[in-house]
Length: 195
Image 1: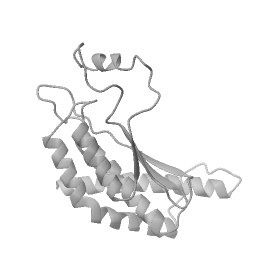
Image 2: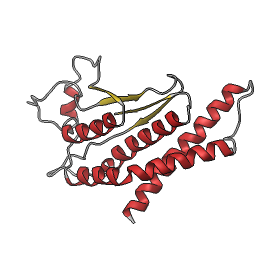
Image 3: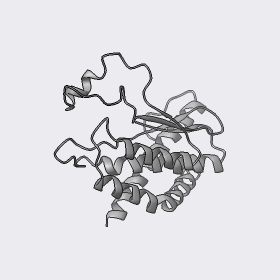
């Protein structure tokens, strides 16, 4: 049951992206912008089925990551192991990963105290667990992005009541599957995943 729900969530996520991507391509090729989401063409259906097949090949690893994150919750700004696991998986599939968030204001760390850190927090500055992962396709644009979260809720102990243990693996799985299909089918654009 859990595997079916996870797979359905991932397939729906990819379907929405593909339908929107199809609308962008069709709008770019015509002067008149579509007013509604166009019907799925044979080509888009074939691409969706190819993405579904890629998801099937990734699903056991994605479930493994989901389960690990559920049983090893790390609260926001401290999700070092979850971040490393997700980015390592992206790297294995050819994504280039950049860690951290550049250009944060100098007083950013005060927000961590508002978010539940003790006033004497002395951990790393900024958001060292955040990342941007990019799979460069045949062209830079259009960029299809997947935002993921993997932090747990603060508590004693921390816990995943917000399904971020599922969202991180699902989002990177969608990015990986789509990147592979785009590459195999010579589809323009690039796939990104970030938090």
